[in-house]
Structure formats: C-alpha cells, structure tokens
Image (tube, rainbow, N blue to C red):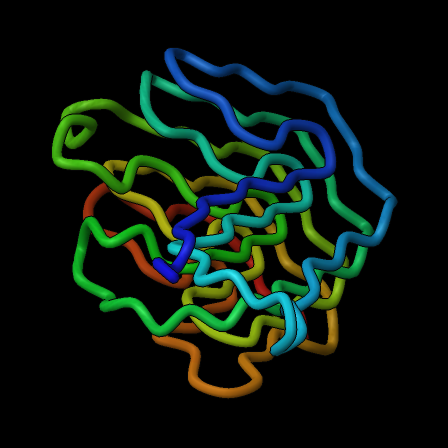
Length: 178
C-alpha cells in the first residue's frame, strides 16, 4: 500500500490563496486545531499550514493588513519530511502559516502590516511563530504578539516570536510581549 501524501491549509479567514491575495480589517476569535491522525488511519501529510487569519498563500504579491487573531491555534501534524527551503514543512503562524515555499515565487512579495496576535500557539513539528510561521520575500511591520505561549512540542524546526523561518525581506517596528 502506497502512502498518501496530502497538503492542507487551514485559516480562520482563508485556508489557501494564490495570485495577489489581499486580506484587510479581518478578525478571528475561533480556536483552530489540527489533530494528529491515529495510527489506525494515519496519512503521511507532506505539510499542514495553519494560521489565525490565513493558512497558506502560495504566491502573488500578497497583503495582510489590520488583521487580528485572538484564538488559540494547534498544529498537531507530525511531518517526517525534510526541512529544506522548498519542502513545504508544517507551518503555524498567529496571522499567516506560510507564504511562498516554491522556487517560482521568490520574486513575489508578502506584506503583513499592523496585525496582532493574542492567541496561544502550539505545534507538534515545523515552523511556529506569533505572526508568520514561514515567509520568503516578506515585509512584516508594525505587528505585535501578546501572549504567554509559543510552543513547539516535539521537534520544531524553528520557533520565533514574530517569524519562525524567514528567507528575505524585513521585520520593522514589531513588538513581542510575553
């Protein structure tokens, strides 16, 4: 029996988007949980991207502005895949799980501006951060993360208060209060 490879994107406002996504003035207060499959029905997920506002944005020049997450987020997917730049690892972010993650999108940009996260974050594996779990070519500015917990349970590849993994761009005027 061949193992099944599945990618999933889960967000409080948008699960997955591409080609110039704009999300403005949006709020999420619903807790989001992605549970690990039981051993009886386990699927080998290649990745789960989970975010309080958006799970995954695949490309395009994207903008997330004046958005706020007050929910608790848990990514319980156990991914044994490699964590090279374009492997699509598990990503968890209080605002956005991941942006880009392909060689074709390296010239496209993400701007996350004036966003806040007040929810508790917990990930079983992968990248986890208060604002963006993974980003390439991103500007994160005037954002804040206020909470008591940003946790990686088993083996997070990278954890950060504002960004978990970040390949290019800038982080400006951001605040972490934990």
